[in-house]
Image 1 (tube, rainbow, N blue to C red):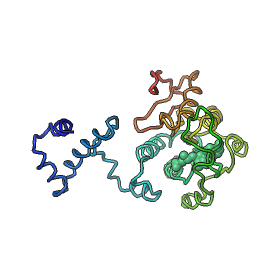
Image 2 (cartoon, protein in one colour):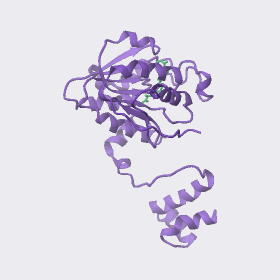
Image 3 (tube, rainbow, N blue to C red):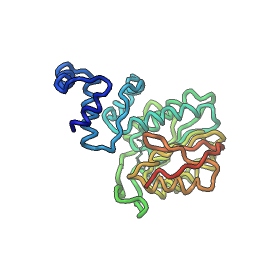
Image 4 (tube, rainbow, N blue to C red):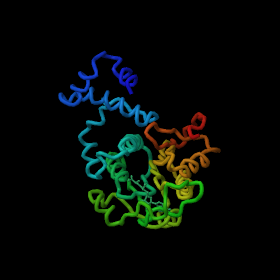
Length: 268
Ligand SMILES: C[S@@+](CC[C@H](N)C(=O)[O-])C[C@H]1O[C@@H](n2cnc3c(N)ncnc32)[C@H](O)[C@@H]1O
C-alpha cells in the first residue's frame, strides 16, 4: 500500500497527509483520483483505470441521454458512446439500421437519432422476444439464465416514443422473427443478444444484407461473461475477409467489404 501510494505520487512528491487533506478537505479532484488509483491498485490490481480528463464525460447531451436510461452511474457508458459514434459513420451508407435485442431501447435510441441525419429516409428495425434471453448453451458459460433481461414491448416503445414513426418493431424469437421483416439492405446493425445461438443467427441473417461499408457491431464481443457471443462472431468471420475489430471498452465490429488483419486471440 505504501509503495503504491509513493508510485502514484511520482509526478509531484508530497506528504501523505497533504495528499489526504487535499483529497478530503479541499475536494481536489486530481488528488481524489490519485487516492482512487492507490485503492484500486490495492483492491483489484488488474483493474485498469483511465485518465479522468475524457472530454466526452462532460458532454451534456450524452449525460442527459444516460440519465434518461438510468445509466449515468452504470458500467455501460463506454459501449454506449462507441455505439453512438460508430452509428454516425454509417449515415451515408445505403439502407436501414437494425438492433437484435433492444431491451429498454437505449441502444436503439442512439441509432434512431443518428438516422435523422441520413441523406435519405431510413427506418430503424428492432427485433426482440420481449421475453428475455433464450436458453443458454454450454458455450455460453454460467452467467446467463433463460428469461434474463425481460422487459415489455410497451415499456421499450414508451422510451422510444419520440421515434414512433421512424422505428419498426418485430416481436418474437430470433431467428424466426426475421421472417416477418421485408427484404432490404442495412447500413448499421447492432447485435446484442448475449448468447451464442441468437448472435450467430443474427450475423448469419444480416451479413449478406449489409451494404458495402455498413457496420455490424456486437455489443457482447470480448466480454468474458458473453463467451458464446464472442465465439459466434469469431466463428462466423473466420472465413470472411472482415475480421472483428475489438474495442477497448468491450464490443467488436466489422465494416462490410473492408478486409481486416487477423489478430492473436485476446481471450485466454
Ligand atoms: C442485453 S439486452 C439488449 C440491450 C440493448 N441492446 C441496449 O442497448 O440496452 C438483450 C436483449 O436481447 C433479447 N433477446 C435475447 N435472446 C433473444 C432471442 N433469441 N430472440 C429475441 N430476443 C432475444 C432480450 O429479450 C433482451 O431484451
